Length: 573
Image (tube, rainbow, N blue to C red):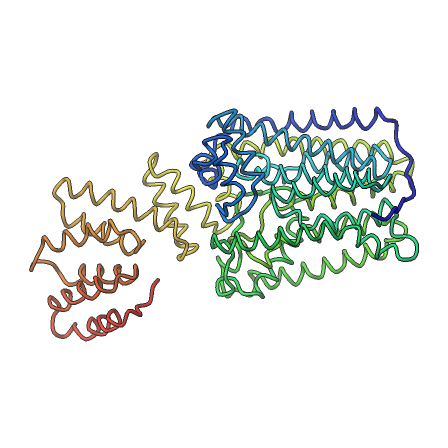
């Protein structure tokens, strides 16, 4: 490695960073430990922990092999799986232990970020404020309070450790120190591949505060220095795309065209900034405007145009200030760059954005705010007490909002009830809330499931849940001898969710039992459900029976449907 010793910043007293780190870790833990009262959720937690047999078995040789080779849940992050396994080994299925592990990781990440910034800049106060703003902000709650997002806090912890190791290497370059940077970065990628942008972020730190871009050929040497890191990032990116494609998590361009993705990406950059300044209405899922309001110009295009102009203006201001306030350019580019992998150009899932995606990008905004405040205090010394008070109030406000937001994640019903209340046309929130209420309040469950279907007619889970409910009702009617009411429920279930084979079978059994008394319309409905499920042979059979019982004048359209079924090309809803 080339020895590129930067101008060494004045180091603060040794005790100051250590005591500050301990204080920040304790404060962060005190705020977020409320998560220990929360349950597991029915959203992703089963796939990651509670119903994942290799994980619930604890740390085993077979589990380790599975973690290293599995693309389960459309991801390859073996270190995250191992951390879940260790929790199951220690705590079993007691949710409190799993939550406290995530809280401890986040608290340690905050402490390491403070130490890293202190080493990088030699300034303890703005470093503490930046790390505190990162740690205590309510946008961190989703990452910490959701067990399935362990990958966020684990990769974040390793990212902060990587930055600290890099800061020490940059001040005194050496093979062992650089080797530690490589190892920590590789471990971070094994926890979550979002860290692929971290090598570029380290190049930004070379610009400020390290000042390593000075001198002839410095840029080339610095990029060469990061080449092993970029190679690891590229390998992780390839594995991630393979895992997500294997799991069907990557949305096709037919569902979300490229134009809609670009527009949403621009709008999301500004939406994240807005949530940073005014963290209100935070939700576990934000519906993509192109899905819930397709074809609406105002739904996405106009906000995207405004967002694009704001981003251009912000970039222009940061470039203009790069000589006197280089931290502004570094912080701004850090924010834009580290969000790029999850901004939605390569769409994974159907959300517009997600609070958890801000975990690493938030560091850039924290740098900009903290050192901007420092410069303002230096320029106007009389404002220092006021700025200190405002900074303290900002951290206290973040802590209070985070404490409240953690309560939103208490259980599945609370989480999705809140999301449905603070967002519009949220089909995921309505669908999950309906599923959570199925046993407790059937009437309310049906209302929420119907809303979900209204907001996104092609979203399968609400249809499947409502179909299961109708099958259950049909069975109850059949037990009471009310065959016609049972048949109506089965047919509705089959049309709602054509892949519900029980609904089709039960409806078919009742129609067979009716024999010649069976009417044409139920037979035709069952044929349509079979065709939608891809069972064209059954569709042809039931459609034939419907034609036999239909009046002569009503047969032509039924015969046209029969021809389509025979051709196997019936359109599916």
